[in-house]
Length: 153
Image (cartoon, rainbow, N blue to C red):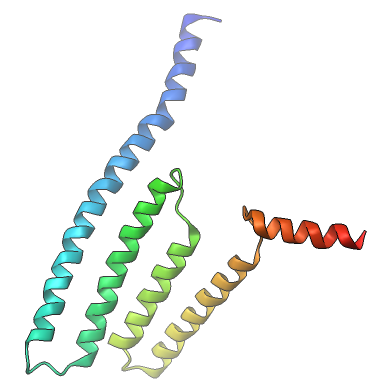
């Protein structure tokens, strides 16, 4: 093999490692920013609680759900590093459900939009249910299916 071809193959093998490193560093910076925003949301939330004249429950619920959105994004980043650079799909569904519920609470002036948002939540929940029924990479579920199919043979 020529030296140029070996250099090219070596370069091609380095590209995914470099991109993975850039991605990991970017996610760490994003997590730090999200932590600061989470703390800011806690401060805003405590100010709403302390103010005696605030009876706006919609604002209260919207801030709680924003807090959970930040929390879920941070949790998803943590899971990404714990599960060998993989984002679990269920966290995207959690975030989608929480975001849509927040939208329903905050913006429920138009009944058709509220109905559409609630249908989106239903679709996300059905997707989550279907995802939990499938036996992907779950040894206990695979064992259950193998046991039941081998007994019938």
